[in-house]
Amino acid sequence: MTATVSLAQARRIALAAQGFADPLPGGRVTRRHLLRVVDRVQVVQIDSVNVVARSHYLPFLSRLGPYDRSLLDGLRDGRSGGRPRPRGLVEHWAHEASLIPPQTWPWLGFRMRGPRVDASTAGIRARHPGLLEAVEEVVHGHGPLTAREVEAHLPHGAGSRREHWGWNWSAVKVCLEHLFRVGAVTSAGRTAQFERRYAPLTQVLPPEVVAMAPGAPDAPDDLTCAVELMRRSVRAHGIGTELCLRDYFRLGAAAGRQALQVLERAGEVEAVRIQGWDQPAYLDVTARRPRSVPGRALLSPFDSLVWQRRRTERLFGFHYRLEIYVPAARRVHGYYVLPFLLDEQLVGRVDLKADRATGMLVVRAVHLEASAPSHAVDDLRAELASTARWLGLERVAMP
Image (cartoon, rainbow, N blue to C red; front, side, top):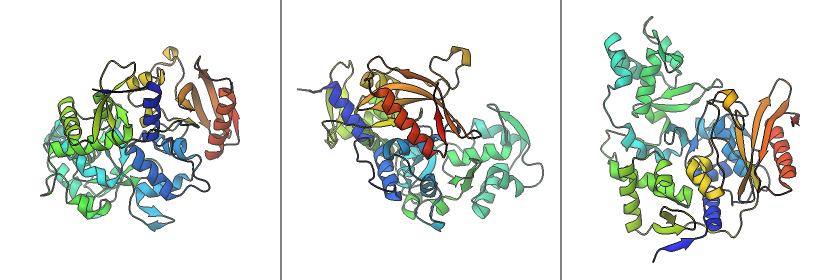
């Protein structure tokens, strides 16, 4: 008989799996604390919007409280206190552009495998024969390099401009992004201007990971990749439907279903029913089942807790949509809206902007749920004040 999990318990399992039931650090946040969050969530989405802070910094704030952002930069860039250290994070296309543990990188090989010529590079090859190979040679010979630095190593004119999805990407940039996507090169981090620094795999990834790169003798097959990614997704969710679980790493329906079946046969997941849901769910058999998950946090719009909007609505009764790309006149809640998590519930939305010129964290709008407790406003004010201090801003400007 299929076990039934209450909605409240499913919510607590999900929050615990995402790290919200872990105790906050008692003192200064360290590299070890950040790695604990990485171990919980597995994937941290990157986004260039800097209205409050770059999105990848915010999930750590939500789970740890204020911390030194240079620690996270060091995990990504392979340094600590100015000294080289093993990387705790590398960049690749996982959910979207994401930071992931280095050990997860080879399991994305199913997505990296493919032709060395695709739609993005066919025109480049026709107009600039040999450029793709030349770009790869420059990265392997001189990396880490930004796209502009790679261009400087090539003959004049190789980086002729063309329109690409609204940005003027050079032919060199198109080649670099293709090489990055197929796992021929990787990223050694980002510049202060958020430019990716391209590098050979051997400069960034551990030897045992490089040995599993696409095309290498030890490269895992597609099913093994799917099973390993689904295993990480199950752990990061605690509980969820097939769609929830496979969407975390953007697995296709067939691959995700097959991987889930493998884990179910192995006894790693259990099919369950969540009270009130009309679809079957799957439970991580090792998932924590806390009796409560107290606390408060502002969530990035790109936080992995709220990626799957249907799941967010089912778990929390919270209808959330990203409105950055919605015309201003048609926005309901604002441009950069952070959900507010309070004691196991999403109780409101806050449209925020860090106005660095005036030293203010500007609250453009607050929308609380009808179910928000009476103390939600005070809790939100306290969280906003903490966020402002973390950003180095002097005060919060409320509407």
